[in-house]
Every structure is written in C-alpha cells, then in structure tokens.
Length: 147
Image 1 (cartoon, rainbow, N blue to C red):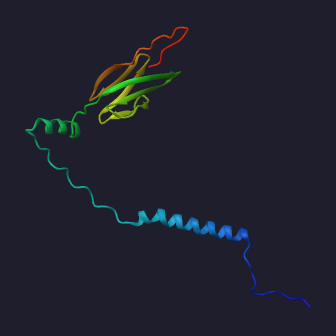
Image 2: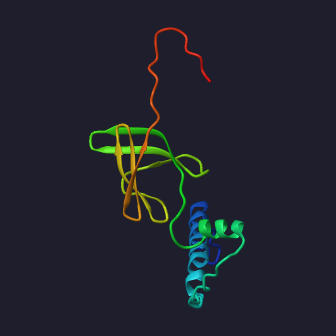
Image 3: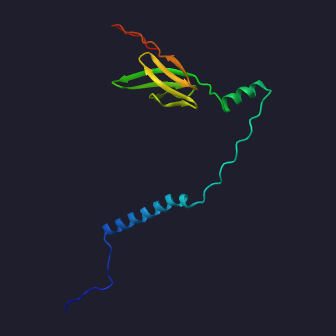
C-alpha cells in the first residue's frame, strides 16, 4: 500500500530564510516609500525685510550673517600637486582643515580659482586674491626638534 501524506508540508530552513528576506525587503521599501507619499510642504514665504541696526555689535553680527559680502579668513596649511591635478589643505575661519580643489566653493560667493606651487588664488565677487602658502624649512642631517 502506497501512503501519501497530504497536508503535512514542513518548510525548510532555506525557505524560511528566503521568506524572512522577502518580508524584510517589503518592510524597508515601505519605510522608504512612506515619506514620498506625504504631501509637499507649503512654499516658503518671502524673506523678511532687512532692518538697519544702531547697535555696532548688532551691525557686525548682521554683516556676518546677513546677505552681501562674506567675511572669510583663509589659511593655507599645505599644497599637493601631481601632473595636472592639485589639492590645497585650507583652514577657513575656525573650521577644521579641509582639502579643496580648484573650482570648489569655500564660502558663499568665494571660490578657489587656482592652486600654485607657492600659494592659492581665491575669487570673491569677481576680485581675485592671492594667499601665500607657508614656507618649508629644509631639514638638515641629525636631530630635529619637534614643536
């Protein structure tokens, strides 16, 4: 007599793994699609009118944060060139040092225009300014005191 077992199907470990992966994929898709289904935020309103200040400290702060020319302090920490590519390690204002390539924006309205062997050139509102790199001291044979 040939017996068949009807209704006694048991899932294998591989099937369970695939099912769990499919459920995880659907859950992650739902998480990422949900923000796309939200209605758009209302359009931004017109900016507030610019006011004038009588307090010198407020005027200084407004000149730093408001529209117009940006005050920027650039320090050249290092330069690297190879064939036709160059990189400058710059410290801008009090931010940590960062590598920049020609054409990159340093701040609003300020662009790194050129990297040369002895410094960099930046453009600010059409005016190009040159900033020299620190000079390197040649090391001699023997002990060198580290700072």
